Amino acid sequence: MSTYLHKTRITTAVIALLFILLGSISGCSNTHTANQNATSLYDEIGGSKTLNTVFGVAINRIYKDPVIGHYFNGVPKSHLRKQLVSQTCELIGGPCVYEGKAMLETHKDLNIKEREFYILVEYVQDAMRDVGLTYQQENQILQKLAPIKYETIYL
Ligand code: HEM
Image (cartoon, rainbow, N blue to C red; front, side, top):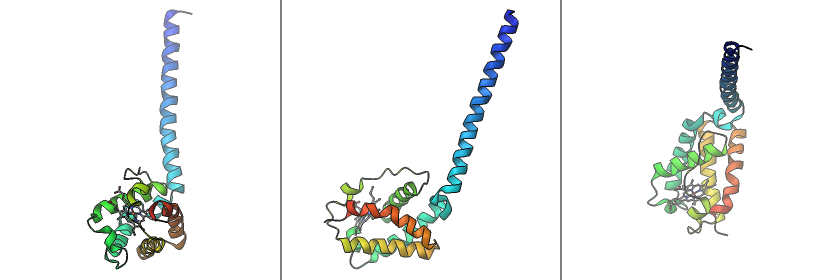
């Protein structure tokens, strides 16, 4: 085989490889996006805009609650909202990575009672309903938050 032909074949192989690589990268991201669009509860409910509204509404009520409101004295609403949105976003298949404090560490010295936990959950549930989430979406989100109960309450 002549050197020229040899070089041409190598060049063709390199170009083909590049096309395959680029194809698989873009194919991969397309599939990824398609899957996320098709399956994520996060996208289904309207993403971070909806979560921000839900937690904004819930937090305003929680801070005024006569039983649990006092826990939040000195906790900036915007901070708590940002962390709850990010945590829930991650839990329901959104693109977020929760980078806030660990749940056990955050709540362990607060001595939160079980019934107080349920008061908070009810505010979140009411806010989801008020914002227009379906009963099914509401339940799916609550199911994701439920296991956190044992990291927040004092038993
Ligand atoms: C499923 C239930 C709960 C979830 C998902 C949750 C989640 C969170 C998150 C993400 C933070 C922010 C952590 C950070 O600053 O990085 C936080 C902080 C806090 N949570 Fe909860 N929480 C829950 C239940 C409760 C309950 C029942 C109470 C009280 C009644 C409570 C009181 C607080 C307080 C006072 C803070 C602020 C702590 C501080 O900044 O020192 N949480 N929680």
